[in-house]
Image (cartoon, rainbow, N blue to C red; front, side, top):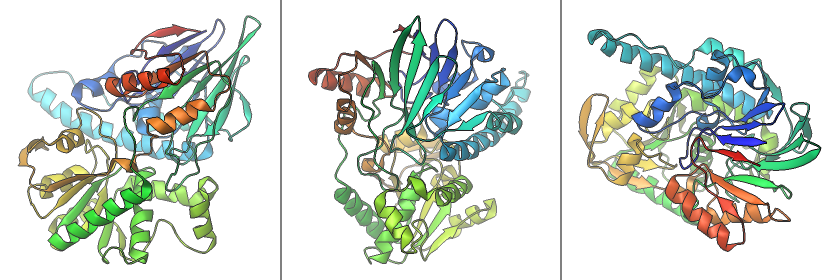
Length: 462
């Protein structure tokens, strides 16, 4: 059996594993590469395998860096089944459809430049028709049930505690009268998630592939995170400026709404207007409302008492482009939550363009910023950035709360690994920038785990 790392090896995006035996081939995730231009060009390169040869795909969850290239697989002939939870299927459709629209707009803009230079036109990465074709291949699975993927490959899905419907997956492979178990962590959530249930442990596996996004750091306590969020909201309000929050549309946007609603109810922040300026986040919130079975006990109890965890007085949805543009003319203090989380696309780019030079305003990061993205450079401290054809001075106050991350820190990742008894024969560390992955390698080596940090494209024989 061979497993090839086709993404998310010493980087944090483009998650994709190829698992092949003598008779069968499957993929685990097929995500988009996100970051600077060099990284994003990888999305347009030919697959170094033939999608037609693969029997199935297991999707751990619906974030773009895990599902974003699935329609491209369809474009190049993949016809196998795609296995995921019901919430993952619904959220993936929203995210992939949005990605198709963004790709079409980006290519149209690029082709205007190419025509002027006499260069051939480019085609979008994929289109909405290929997203629809992908959705027909989905098969819904439930947690804690054995699923027959192919004749000799079985899978069991566990709640990863990361986003709604996210999974860690234990795979059993029969080959040459031998059974081998391999577990893929997917993205592991924090031990105390705002909305979803805690991570479900896997206890047995011969080999483990574990993410390491925060493999070199610890998250602050939840109480400290909430105090910091309250402080930033109140300081922004006192200045009379806008608080702009670039947000991932799945899980993070809903967490922010829940927290702000709770703060308002307790009188911890003023009755400031909050604008959810992301059509995709609105659609995702509707999916959350349809799947309360994934909520943790705290949210479920509030729901039973008639509380809506994602709504409160003063929350306004800006559905249309004109409604979004109108936010530029607001002179009073307000909060704007807009996609996307790394400021590389979406409406947040326009808000930054129109507001970042005003020192009354605040830009708050609440998620991981991949190297090379606009969010990465602003968070890093750049005082001047280029955006939408303009050179802009960064005069707004820049704030960051890393503990809103949906990813476990290194202590929580180690605890997840300690659930395996006996220890796996080998742990492979993936889905993290090189510095984080190597730091995590040293930490788990000290805990007695034999481990290895593979590189992109490497093939491992198990």
